[in-house]
Every structure is written in structure tokens, then in C-alpha cells.
Length: 168
Image (cartoon, rainbow, N blue to C red):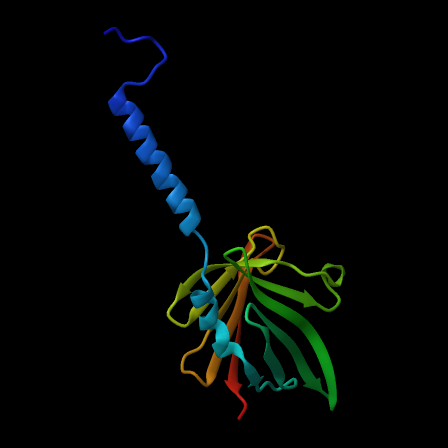
């Protein structure tokens, strides 16, 4: 039997099929599951950060099995000043953190994808956003919330911490 140019041998064909099946399996397994999303349930509740310029708050509710809703605000001279609203949701194996910051981005959502979960630490990223490019949340211990934003402004690294305590 002669080999014809352009055709794969049986061994090469089997190898190609195995590689295609493996890559298809990897694509299907990418992303986050409902179980991963449930780890974010620790965010539900009201959180307070004391500051000399006025206390800041984040309040989160469970909207549906695949979505949380949050609002952040501060108390300033006896007035409540709303800072942003956030949708945190699971869609097509993606966990999206979608804030709307008042007075910025034409008050439209900016989407940040969950990039990593390490225990009770969650990091969301949007490398194309001006600032921040990363948003982190850590629940250590359970009655504490350490949030932060970071990225670059004018090519200079910037990191801002927000350390909240859970209101009882």
C-alpha cells in the first residue's frame, strides 16, 4: 500500500482526534460553576468602614440564585451620598462584577470578570478599564470584608484598601 501526499497516517489521525477531544473538554471545563458562585454568598449583609471624613457602607442582597445586588454609600455631614451600585452575577460560566459609579463612565456598567478564587479571596479584572483594572474582595475573618481596587493611573501603580466590618 502506498502513502498519498496530504493524507494522515492512522497513528497521526488517532493523535489528532485525541488532541481535538482533549481541547474540546478543556473548553467545556473553563469558567466558574454555581458552586464557585455560592462562595460569594459571604458578601450578603451590611458592611461599615469608619473614616474621619465620614463612614462608608456597602450593603448586599441576594436577588436570585445567580445574582447579588450591592450599593455603596457614605455618610457625610449627616447626608447619605450614594457612590455606586453593583450587580454581581453568574452568566455562561462567567462571574461578572458590574459596578455603576455615579458621575463616571456615563453611569454605565463596567464589567470585571472573576479571574481567581483563593479560599475566601476573589479577584476581578478588566485590563482595558482606565482605573481600576482589578477589584478584590476577601472575607477573613467572616465578619470582616477587605475590598481593594488597584491598577495604574498615568503609568503609576495605585492601590486603595477598603476595610469593612459586618454590621450586626
